[in-house]
Image (cartoon, rainbow, N blue to C red; front, side, top):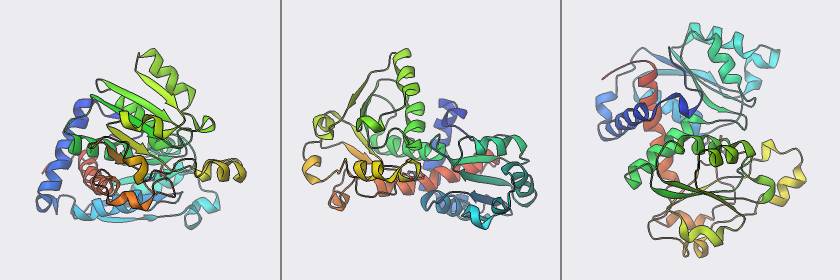
Length: 304
Ligand code: NCD
């Protein structure tokens, strides 16, 4: 039985197969409409979410399966003190696969070690968010036609943003990628990541101003300042509007640069940018459904 805790749990070849499957699902949805008939997905969300939970649920429904679960720790027995290990043992009796989001780093991993069904990490604290990374990679592969051979700017909260940590780890396995980390000094990418980049001889640069580097980028990955992970509100308020991508800054960028964002957006991308054809964050959310459909089929070992 396989789980997905970290984007590196799949090899590059396995990811290629997963993305091929996701693209086939996008092109032929009716072929897959009953693939999971009789199967159930449990979504166990101990932390707020719109996209991730609903896209998992939509994915399972699109495959003809059903869904059950909770969207908030307060409405689960966690509020009575139940451990994730006990909860997953119970969920294993009710469902065939589980997507779990938890504010504590490593909680889905603990659950996986006790689970009778595949567990998918749907975000654990500031640590990892592998299915967002699958979404990001599929979006890049589908819209750019390749994974590798580009300069990617990651901008915003690179310290607490788990989507950033997962995406960097995943991109390190593709050739010729240059990273530009754009953040205020307080929200820099963690040292363990830059240490790894140096060890592997990967080209990267850390800058503060988006305007100075936007012209070099093939991809710009914007992120929200992660309010819920700050220790005090004052720091959040000071940093929250550090970056605002608007049409003026977009005018400095290449004609084929793509703007991605895992969403939710707060102020970091002005709504005027939404009409720019280079803004692909809403398309990205659609790719998220296809890739989660492909993931559910893969972990349940269902072939169509
Ligand atoms: C991200 C997350 O939860 O980490 N959202 C998502 O799943 N699309 C990004 C965020 O909350 O900023």
